[in-house]
Amino acid sequence: MDRRKLLVVAAAIVAALGVVLVLIYAKGADKRAQDTYDTVEVLTATAQINPGESIDQAASGGKLALKPVTRGELLAGYQTATTALTGQVALATIYPGEQIIASKFGTSAVPVSALPIPAGKVAISVSLSDPARVAGFVNPGSIVAIFLSGSAGGQPYTRLLLSRVTVIGVGATSDAAVSAADGTAADGTAADGTAANGAPANTEHLPATLLTLAVTQQEAQKILFAQGNGQLAFSLTTTTSKVAPGPATTLANLFG
Image (cartoon, rainbow, N blue to C red; front, top):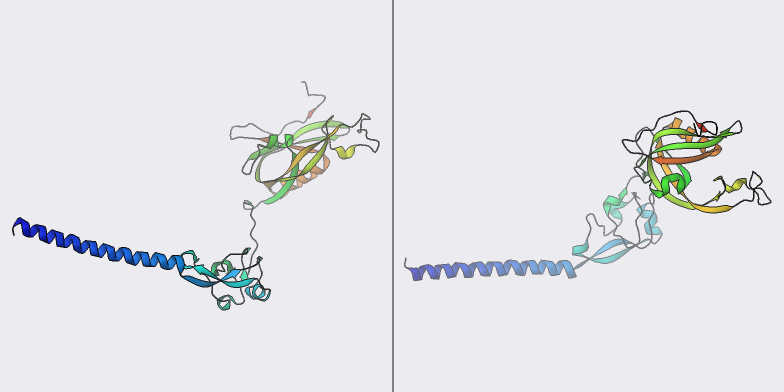
């Protein structure tokens, strides 16, 4: 076969490939146009549906409506009627505008804690001012040592309460009134505006934050008792921090 015939054959092959590619592109364009402009009437929430609320209750309460959704935006398991979900309840909150999909409904809604509580432990929360929580550097996942400042037999002391506790949540609360003179809660201020020691009260408000801890039952009891009978302070620790139980620090050994 001479060179001219080879060129003719090659040109024919290229032309055929071009036709095939054009057809493929045209088919894809049709599909894209269909996904963009072709719509399906999908069951959609018009009001918030709460966990545990049945599809029947939502329907009778006027919380559902059919709305056109383009094929490109359809979610897996979308519904066009309530029939397939009859008797089922919402497993999570469904917000207005959301498509009703099968995976968000089931036979029962079991509340799931958003807190990562380790197995065998419980969660408790304590309220601390910024200085008592290391100026805001304590975050979820932090390991802290907890100190208690209180009074026994009329003698003030500070002592380590727990050496290693995991923080699993941090959330802001209201301001805490604190006496700037001695750091004690302003609730102890006398009716005439004086502190417990007779000096004029100088009260300021420090932002207080709720810190949620993962602890054992015994640790929870210690923390809750201590919180009601003294002041707690957290110390942020690392893997190399040396924290161990020891004698309380009092005025007698403060400078020893």
